[in-house]
Length: 388
Image (tube, rainbow, N blue to C red; front, side, top):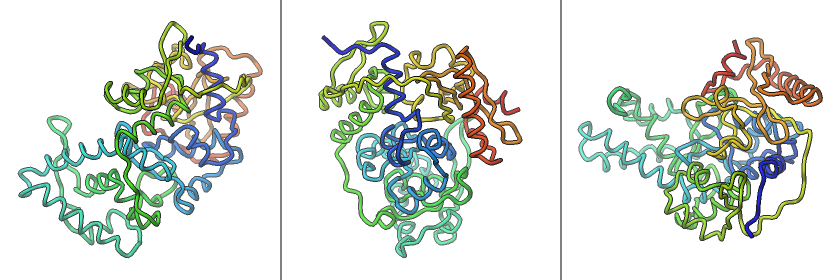
């Protein structure tokens, strides 16, 4: 008999495994246990850690990223920027990032056709000169690199048709070199809300070169991480989260020995063969998660924790805004007033006790932000209303 998971079982697992009761002992543990923190919006990792780690300070994540360097901000699945454990960077690269980077390099070469002779060779020469700048072991702003290698300031046309635009070459090449694990985003150029970073050579930043992992091994290890945190998950969930083909997903499932599980509504999910519940059934757990948080972005089929609340909480491209959770299910959303106050709107009745706990969490987040107003990069209908 395949294991069975009712929706409430899945929500209980989610609360425990994703530290929605603020049970993570460190920001590194929180990142590892949800596999990776989304970082396309620079504020997301900080707010995601606040929701999961007791007495979290923004400096805790800065220290893990820039001083201890146990975390790495890099592109991986679906060309998305994540914060991942440094020790697993090669897995993210082999399992997802390297294939994405190869496509990005081909695209950049295509954009350079007709602009320079032999784009691949010209780009390789430029790359070697850029990397040579980092020979002193220091980190640099983009503008400083452009001063040292003037070609980086060259304007190129990217995209096509109405989606085309002109950008400096630096914005594409540095992005690509970081995707290929040659460069790393070092300390933010501004506050923790800034999306501008200094750049450093990855091997010097971490004190060693990253040994590559073969794609098949990378996909198997990445799927193991994912199922440990997000299982049971459907084929649709896994393909969406990883960006893999059906063939690669099935091969990875076979490689890790995943087993089928019966979900509510007779849907088929997959879990690791050794996955055993702890029989925990947490109750009275209230959580405020930020936009693009890794938990709601971890599944494509979301009804079991989202209900019918997608309309006000997601944008047209499938990006989720700030959400309010009770016992592993979404019950509303939140946003910030211009004065910094965190405002909440519930989309269903949750009872007086849960409502009081939600108000308490909103007040605690307001206090933690201390007047800092965070505007999500991908805005959603409810967040816009609450922020006006």
